[in-house]
Image 1 (cartoon, rainbow, N blue to C red):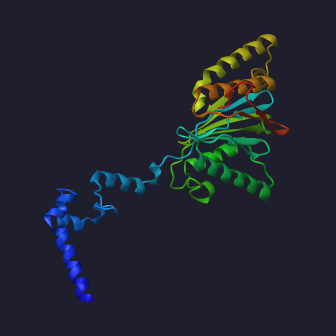
Image 2: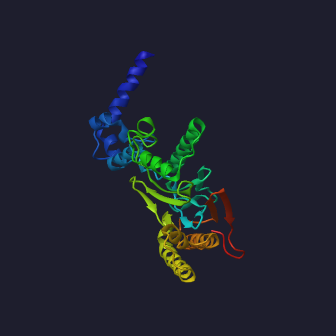
Image 3: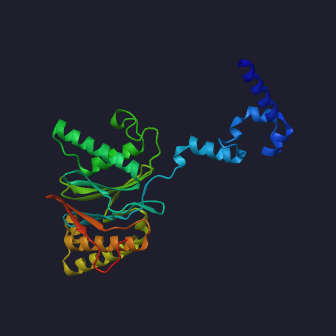
Length: 305
């Protein structure tokens, strides 16, 4: 039995090393290269070009090349006279594919603060989850509700991979995050609403009147600027001047109903003009009383995107 096996092995080696077998596969392959590089043959016996092998190896070795789930979205936050109004659409997409039509992009972190997320869905969900746990732990341990500014700076430390954040490294340790966040809420210390915008580089900006984020924000910035300037001019002409700067800044802000209308129209514009935005509008009102959520469905007769 062993002699028959040795004979079969010799015949197989002779057949493989013959010029006819090598030329039938590829003229550039000889017997030595065939045995030195067995990966050049696929399982069915076909030849895989070297360039294609390198592309496959790079794809398997670099999983980051795989396209992540992206929040192509429209996020808006507008300060009004007694707080902040925020709004977002509900579409989550992967390039041109809509993966979720009714996603939640506004997350309550504390009774007076929310975070609006855009960018990579995995990165933003992880950051929001860690932030919510951190805020809850501070409340349970010390009985302290963190302010909007403290929450925004904690998220900034996580994104910038600050070694002092969360006892070393934080949630962003060793990763390049793709995030764009809006942090909004009512600040009890200053008795007014506050807005912060945070990008993947770690830059944190406090906005005065409004903030936008997402792929649909480029279509609505001009509209919001124009409408807020018009409302400011109308309110200044209808009221007398006052020496108090805080009262003057409050008068320059829209009312609650005006802010809700602006958010609704802006979200509808983002859904109409931006391919990554769609669904319906979720609106959240942040004031001294807490958080109030509203849902603005598409008008009857309008095609639901």
